[in-house]
Amino acid sequence: MKDSLFVKLARLLPDKPYLSLKFYKEFGRFPNWKNPQTFNEKLQWLKLYNRRPEYTMMVDKYAVKEWVDSKIGGEYVIPTLGVWDRPEEIEWEKLPNQFVLKTTHGGGNEGVVICRDKASFDKERSISRLNKNLRTDLYTVWREWPYKNVRKRIIVEAYMEDESGRELKDYKFFCFGGCPQFIQLDFDRFTEHKKNLYSLDWELLPFEFNYPRHPEYLFPKPQGLNKMIEVARKLSKGIPFVRVDLYNVNGKIYVGELTFFPAGGMGKFQPEEWDKKFGDMLILPEDIK
Image 1 (cartoon, rainbow, N blue to C red):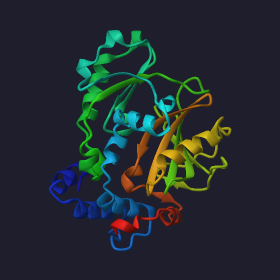
Image 2: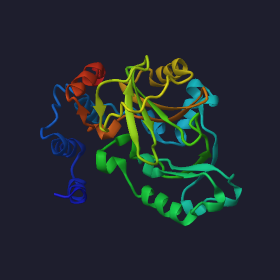
Image 3: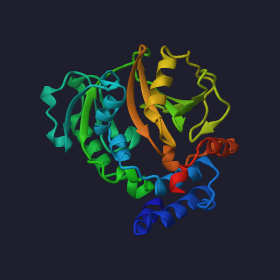
Image 4: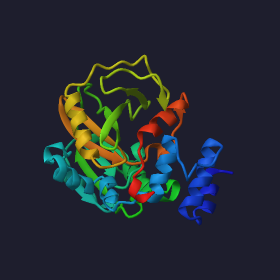
């Protein structure tokens, strides 16, 4: 059965049976709802039962800026140059030569458009891409409920580069109960997207999560790593699991986004035993079991 047909038919199902079927489709077994053990099982459980209303603000790429400001200060917020409901409304003439366009409701790299040179920037193609992304719905496909009520808009942010001079590497901190445990480094995100996983001591780890491992690409320990760890710790405090995505611009830290369900809670580990190891670190809230 094709994914599109599956989604159309399953769209009518309530969350629990829908997630059970989608989990079976991905892993060849149903999730253990009564006693979840793996990371992916526990993320599905959290989708159903850990529905704190502030999570919607935290996944909204525009609204989260206010939340981050209230928690750790505005210096960690990427400057916003404008926000519009539709890409056709963007006031291009008011934008600088370089900028970044994003949809506010998620969608990964598909919801990001980078302008490095306004003179050669293809506005029509960008508008088409943004409109396509505005039609996506993470709630419908993955039942990631925090996105259900996010207002779909376009934001324009300041363009920034890190020490590479060509991109911003993405430092994604996997935080369990307010404790950062692993760092996923995303690089070459808009060419040939690659990922590696590191310990908090910046040691390359021997497993993969949803992407091939690339030990041939070694990056030095980033300037201000301890500061990034502390930022991730503060932003994840009191949350069973959240991935805190940060940028590091020559030691200056910015918050990219917060993610509650990496890979929709259906990412593949290699070796598979790491799914259980991550699951052991994710302690489900006792008060809603």
